[in-house]
Each structure stands twice: as structure tokens, then as C-alpha cells.
Amino acid sequence: YAVNISEDDGLQSFLVTDKLLDTWDIEPDELHTDAIESDLKRGVRFCSLPELMLCKMGALDNAKNYFTSDHANKEPMYVLTNTTGMYGSGLIESELVRERIAEVLEDSFYILPSSLHEVIIVPEEDMDIDELNNIVKTVNEDVVDIDDFLSDKVQYCDEITLKMENAKLHELRTKEVKNEF
Image (cartoon, rainbow, N blue to C red; front, side):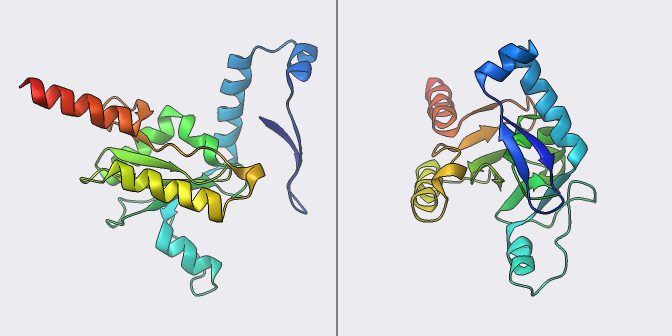
């Protein structure tokens, strides 16, 4: 967790340490809840990965934010971050955010931990979990700065329960249930 002091001329922040939590007399669960609430107030940005890439290359002025608009066109990948694009990956911790993503996609989805700044969302549609994990691992090794590293493990979110779990464990559990029948 970090406290943002200013976002005017680049992000200025400091990390929240255990010592600060003790000084502030705040429990980790309270910090977590406050951080999610704060992130939601900063604004949620949920757009297609191709559109976001076109914006970064200057070929498109603005990527459509599906969080605040109608259902998305079926895209293979989406990006979830905040409106500043800085330290927005924690938004996936909000059940309200997961619920809105499931509504937009009309499907369960995978969460690829891209960096501390964003996560990639992939609709469920018979995806190969090992392939997704390999993509994340390769991108983390080749592209993501070590200070921005989030995880190498893909998560799964069920569109009904909105619970997140390790995608590989979900796949194994699903296979076990199918085998029982």
C-alpha cells in the first residue's frame, strides 16, 4: 500500500510500512478496505487492450471505458486500471468492480496480473490456463519492471459468486467435479 501525496506532476507517494500502521493505530484489514474505497473514488478505467495500445501509439484519442458505458464488444483482452493508470491493479479487489466486469462481459473471466498499475482481463471462453500463465511469466520477465511486479499466477473470477481463486486450482477442481459425474 502507498499513500499518494500528489498526482499533478507525476505520482508522488510513500509506502505504508508496518511501523506506520502501528503509529496510525490501523489494522491491515482497515487499510485494505480504505485503499479499495480510495481507488474507487479515483475512478475505474476498463477498456479493450487493443484500443488502449492504439491510444498509447497516438493512433486513437481515447479508449472507450466499458465500466461506465454499455456492454463491450467481444474482445480477447481488456485492461483494468484507474483513471491515472498508476497503481490501479488493486481495483480488482473490489467486489463491485468484479461484478461490473462480469456484467459487461456477460461471462466469468481470468485476471492476468500485468503490474501494480493494471491487470488484464480475459473472458473465460475455453482458455488454456497454462498458456495464460506462460504469457504472464514471459511478460513479467521481459517487460515488467521488478518494482512493478505483481504476480505470475493467473486468477479466475466466477461471474455469479464473484469470488477470485487461482485459475489453475479452479481448473483442477472443475475437472474433478466433471470426473465425478
